[in-house]
Image (cartoon, rainbow, N blue to C red; front, side):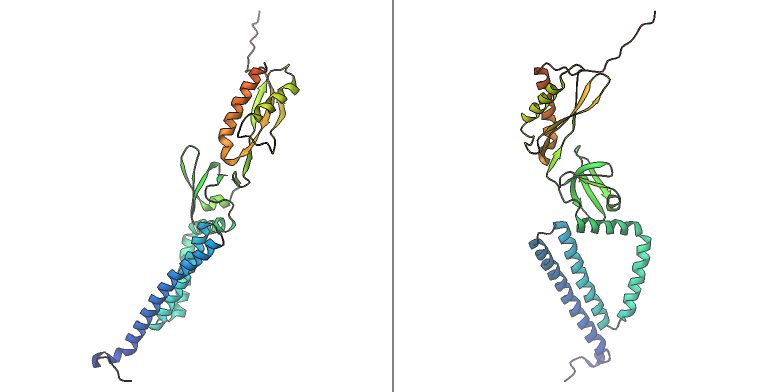
Length: 267
């Protein structure tokens, strides 16, 4: 085949061809990585995978294809890829040791995305903080508290402690303390408290609300009213139950005592 390169460039023919081939491989690899991301994301969504996890796995597949393309391109221009891979591995180890805390948070983020102890919009208690999950990142998770505070927690601190998911089971039970005066008919008081719960729209019929005698205080007989509600109705339900209990006790003539201090005057 006739050489089409100018005579002055013919000594560099192999280098030019290698560079052109490397460029083509890189461009094809770049395009293929984009296609890989979209394909993996589409397949993950069809399998109804969590959106955050779907994007993470799709990104990992994209970067894997791109890394192969870069290594293949460097090989075409004469770079010893075996040595390069070893060098990158050593550099990765050094960076990993320097950033082991952040890598721990990264690993915890992967665990949260894979095992899904909670998902977006779940209400959870973690590390003494209660809030609604707004974002699950690779290094940190963001929650919004009932007071509208934004809480950003490192993923490592989440996976190293207990996680309470208030939303996962769909229903919640409240424990509302109520005290009545000594001398009150216990059966009557318990019946009034149960009937009061039944009048609140947010209280579930099943499981049915219950009332338990929990103790004898200094000035009151203590009960705990335990109504159930859907997760979304939990906060307003507790308010409505307290109002209904107060009105029902007052209507039934049952006294709600208050703490008293008796002072004896010495002669």
